[in-house]
Image 1: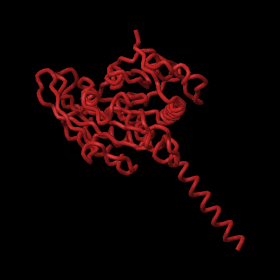
Image 2: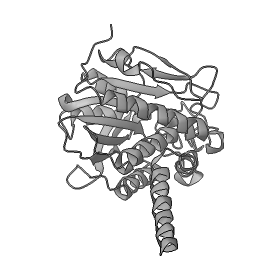
Image 3: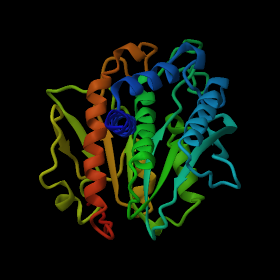
Image 4: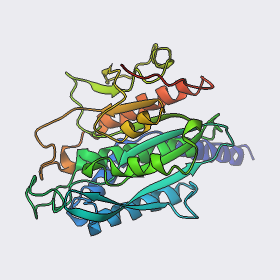
Length: 309
């Protein structure tokens, strides 16, 4: 009888341990995500290319597996078109999912899934026909988005804020997805606690550290950041809320922002930005740092937007 009870307790403990492990950000899972999104199969996830559409469907499927809600008429997709130079009515889409905690305010977590594809829409700026896999830019950010989505849906805690997870399309062609979303939000922007954006978080340089922009976009950020540290990760802050990534459009609509970026490198916007160069173990730690900041920010009932002069 005691042996059966002990065996049962061990089984329960192992199950709980496996659940906890499944929740924690994982370097191996990050690497698998990037391996797929930055594979030649997706041909660089170009906007208006088959690989970009496949990537959007894959992200939607991942959201569905996590049990997140679709918000656009029962769909995860917010479709839109835009013009760029001589190219008209270019189709793209955002992939949007919601974690409803019954709260009054919502935290937005975002990253763009598109990359240059085979560069056909860039008017010769990049080598046309070559696959630009975009492992760091921005398969790494989507990996971070999915790890945070997993953490907040599986941590057995009902947070005091809702979460809106958005994978943006058309970022490389002028922040088109976030521009469309902030002009056509599925939830009121004045009910957003803040927006956290990840763009190129997969090539950590320990000498530089990771930059966190938007530090000046909310009155409370200095207090939120007090005492925050993560083993193996150095970070520095930048006040700017504006920038060349999707947080910019939220900031312009008076939503406080944070922007995570590990910096430029020789493979930026080149066909050599491949998955094997990802530093997944460092990215795992960066996501753990983000969780600390998100959790600290949730101790404030509201963040107050400030304009960075």
